[in-house]
Length: 447
Image (tube, helix red, strand yellow):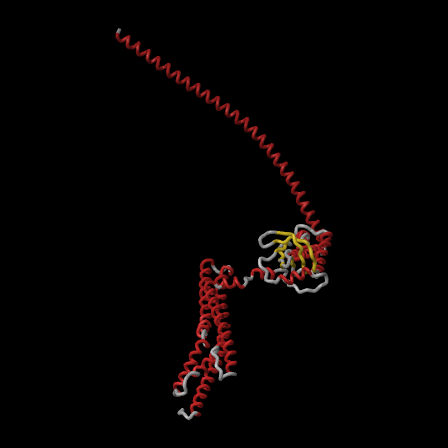
């Protein structure tokens, strides 16, 4: 009975296990069927899409063939048009002949005339002609008949205005930038004045007063006030204002002196002192020489206002008992007493003559040092940056020579004049001594 129970339990477990396997197999069969159905649906959709894509591909190929056909037609029309343009250009070149060369010559002449008229005094009176010349010089357009006539008129106008002196109103710019309308007197194409000032033509037809004018204003004022047909001198510039413009940049005397630097100032001070002393000594010798000449006419009446009179009077109160050596010593002493005032400043002036060029050499070396320093810092590409050092070198040298050469001549003149006066003193002192000895001998005394 016990065995029957065990068998019964074991059979139930086997039945449950078989049921689970069946369900698993069923589930697997259902999944396989479902997967097969999905795959079948996918294959069906792929086949449908393939048919649609083939239809679209056919339509695209048809569109491509149509587009290629249209492109071929457009290409054909383009090539035909290009051929027609080439034929038309050839016909135009054949029909125009030398007309293209004429237009090229007109453009070239207009360009050159435009460059010359840009800063012309005539353009200041007729500024509108630049616009006509710009149109003629434009390479992108052909000049019309009217423009060709205008060009001929401008050329004739340039020829006629070169020989005219006219007055007109025009804006004139000052050096500070202010512009005022003034009455301008134009002298052909070579100059213009306004209010006694020489004007400079600017590009575009403008006029400007230079920052500094080196020309006197008197002739310009007289020329402006002159009546028609009257001839008066006035400065002109054949280079159409370039010389006036360059002259305005030229430094004056004061600026030249400043370019010499500290060495230049020392040279100038030394030169003024030397010239002042030399002129004073010349004046003194001229006065003394005149008095001595008057004294020569009255040797027996010596005067104390001149060296000769004082030398002649040195033995006036002395007795005649002195020995000749004593008398000679007294006379020599009187002559030597007058020499310093007659020969004064000559040693100093000789020193100035020698020191002037040496100081100029110092300034030259200093300027060269400055120039080389500038070259080291910024290079030698721009000469203007080296102008300061070179100017100092040259100006110092010139200043040294300018004070040395005049003072050399003046000192030579002083030396010659003083030697003449000293010679007169020597001659008269020797004569005085001879007369005294002759007087002693005439009285019977020992010589």
